[in-house]
Structure formats: C-alpha cells, structure tokens
Image 1 (spheres, rainbow, N blue to C red):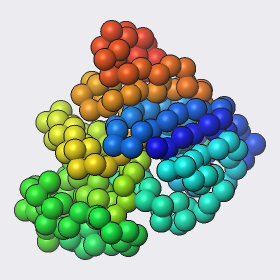
Image 2: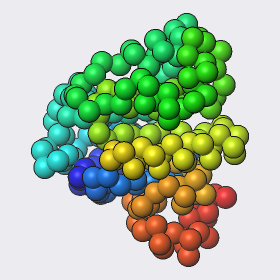
Image 3: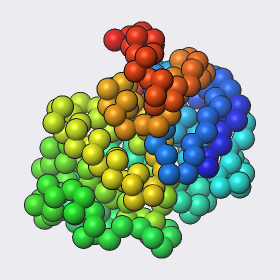
Length: 230
Ligand code: ATP
C-alpha cells in the first residue's frame, strides 16, 4: 500500500500541491485525473523524491519514504515511467531495455517483456529514434518491468497515441496488474482509465476534489468530463 497524506510541493516560491491525500492498494490500478497543470506530474515527482521542496507523509509498505532520496525510493521497488518516455534514440530496443539497473529479484525477463510487446520484439535491433510514439511508450513501460520494481508510476502513457495503440496499452496495463504489480496512472483520457483503473482520484489546482470507485465512474462521467474540460 502506498499512502500519501497531506502532500504539499513547491517549485521555487510557487506552491503547486495543496495537501494531496491518496491511497494505492497493492495489486490495484489507480488513476489520477485532471487538466493540464492540475498537479498530476508533480504528485508523481513528489512520490519519487524528485521535488526539491515538499511536505506531508508518504508511506510505502508501512515504511515512511517521505525523507528518502530518489535512489533509495527506487530501491524500495517504485519506478516512474515519465511523460517524455526517456527512450535513448541512439540505442537499440534491446539496449534500452537492458539499461536500467535491476534493483530487486522478481522482475520480468526480456523474453517475457517481448511476449508482452510482440511489436517491440520485431524491432529489437532498431534504434530508439526509429520507433513510433506507441513503440516508444511500450519500450518505456517494458524497461521498468525488468528492474524488479513492484510499483509503477505511469505519466500519461496514452498521450498523443492513436486509438488502436491506446487499446494495446490498456491491455498491457491489465496484464501487468494480473502479474501482481501495482500502478498509479496519471491521465487526461477518461475512457482509457475507465477501462483499466479500480479507483480514480480527480485533482484540480493541486488538490483531490473527488474519489470514485470503478463502479461509480460511469455514473459520474459528466462531472469527470467537466473537470477535464472535455
Ligand atoms: P500536465 O499534463 O501539463 O503535465 P499536470 O497536472 O501534470 O499537467 P504539473 O506538471 O504537475 O501538472 O504542474 C502543476 C503546476 O506546476 C502547474 O501550474 C505548472 O505550471 C507548474 N510547474 C510544473 N513544472 C514546473 C517547473 N519546473 N517550474 C515551475 N512551475 C512548474
């Protein structure tokens, strides 16, 4: 369980998170929905210890990780898949997959990752820069599955991708969940999260304004769309 309580964060003098509370149960998929600038990426960065100034408490598996450095948090088994995907353009797909250090036993093998993403297997020796946006996203996801991390922070994995690729990413997220991993997913696409998440947090101006369980989401879709400006 990841438990975030009263999380505040600042960029310089600018106070951007105002007391975020959220919980992610082990083995679940939780979405964080909000408009551009609502504070979604900042929440992930704060969990990962990447914000220079933050307050509040973050516990993971009962341990207070709020004061740990990013590398220490990573060693607890939390990994982030950033919005820009961070694929190395001059390295091959396999080299990109092998790059992040293994931090714990139990990560997926390269073969398992290639089973999950057959398109990537076909492009194993292609350079990162030759991949489509969807392939880069799959590579960015595949890469952290190898590390032994059990808890993944995904930052807008569907951004800019065609509907057919979005469906593939949804299938992948379900398979990752079935394999026992936990996911906190930042998104602006309500249809995508409706398909994959167990719980949804709606955030606005650095605060949680609502929490919906999967079975409540459809009934509240107008409210969600309004929050997202759709
Ligand atoms: P997006 O989809 O645009 O990434 P978001 O919900 O993830 O939206 P954040 O990136 O967390 O939003 O941004 C929250 C607030 O912090 C915004 O007002 C944004 O302008 C501001 N902000 C983000 N990054 C920085 C930065 N490096 N320096 C200063 N302010 C920043």
